[in-house]
Every structure is written in C-alpha cells, then in structure tokens.
Length: 301
Image (cartoon, rainbow, N blue to C red):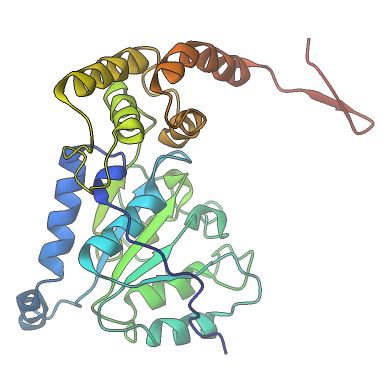
C-alpha cells in the first residue's frame, strides 16, 4: 500500500514573491481564508454541503502555479501533500487509501493533471474554457473514459468528491492545458475557483526586477536594508527601463527570473543586457521547426 512520505522540508515562500495580479491573489486568499475558518465547517454541515474546496491553477509553464500553491500553504500554516497521477504503479485503491489518511486540514496538490491521461473522452465532452459551459449529465461512470495509466477519470472524481472523500482539505490542481481536461473534473463542487496565470506583463517584469535587486532580509519588499532614498529611486528607474524592454505577455516570469539570476547584484548589467537577451528568445520562438533525416536534425528552409 502507498503511504504519504515526507520528501522535503522547506521555508514557507513569502506570498509577495509570487508574481500574480494583486486582485487575483487577494480573491484567492480571501476565499481560502474564509473556508478555513472554524465556523465555516458548521455552516456547510447545517446546509448538508460537503466541507471541501477545490481550486484549478491554469496557464503556461513557468507562470508560478506551483510556487503559489506552496506560498499559500505557508501563509495558512498547512502541510502540503503531493501525489503524481501519472505514476504507473499507483492504483485507484492506493489513491483512495492516500486520501483517507489526509489530516483534517491540509493542502493537497495535484500537479499537471492534463499530463496524467485524464483527458477529454473520445467523442464525448467538448473542450471547456468557460466554467459556465458544462454538460448537464455527470459522466463519471461513462465506460468510454480514457485511461492511459493506473488512475481513471472516475477514480479521481471519487476521491475528490465521492461518498468516502476526505473533508476539510484544500485541493489545488494545476494544468498547462485547461481545455484538455474533462468537463466533469471542472464542474463546481470539484473546482470551485479557477485562477488563470499568464505570461509576464510589464508591471510583473518590473516587480521581478525590484524583488531580485532590493537589498532586504525582510519578507516585506518595502522594508529595504541599507538603501537610502536616492538608491531606491535609482533602482526603481532601472526597473522601469528593464520592464520597457520586455514584450508584454511574451515571456514567463520563470524565464525573466532566470535571466535576472545571472546578474544577482548587478542590476545595471541586467538592464544593459536585457534587450539582447529578449531578441535571442524571440528569435528562438519564431524559428521554424527542424526536420529530421536519418536521426539528424536539419534546419528548415
């Protein structure tokens, strides 16, 4: 039988280090915070509603979906329980046992559910990008469910909100391709709030620059260490120049952060090099796919 194992202990990540719109972040924190209040369980019980809450983080790779999940866990003091649905050796019985062992309050993270074989059933359900466009009948018992590993769609649905499913946990699922997920997985009661993640805006690029180069040991980015007003103004000016070179919604926060990490304590060098770096990345994105002949890649013409 599979059991939960501690694989890592890490300091909680400050929420301000996760790049996401302030309004989205506040809405999400407010929703989870209200759900975790002691009186909320009673409210659910009185109305006969299962005490569960599910969230879907969706968007391109490198946009901070997993990072935000861990930051939320740290913010609310929750342990994180991760399980890979793509693991070929795990059975549906194992998954049920794992969920049965969850503590009363915790965060369950299911990453990249689109890559776990839980895709739209052949010829059955349409692609869904709008949570209001859901099919009427529940399809969890459909014999045509696609199953490419040990966990079927119906098996996952049963542990999420079946009769024996655990109450009190926060469930976060992440996906890079929301339209490939079955509509039955996305309906309210399983996914109660959908949080979109996008490629970086200019404002986010500016925030990443300041976050990287602000000299501080505090979790509050406003409380800089050893920076006078002039230095702070100079850094903010460099951040604006840096962000001006980043095309809107073309690069992921992870890509931008990776570039900034090359310069660490040299913000001026990061500003000087960013234009060249962006051009290189854009050229790679625009390059045509290569052709393969006898196992060798040849450039397309």
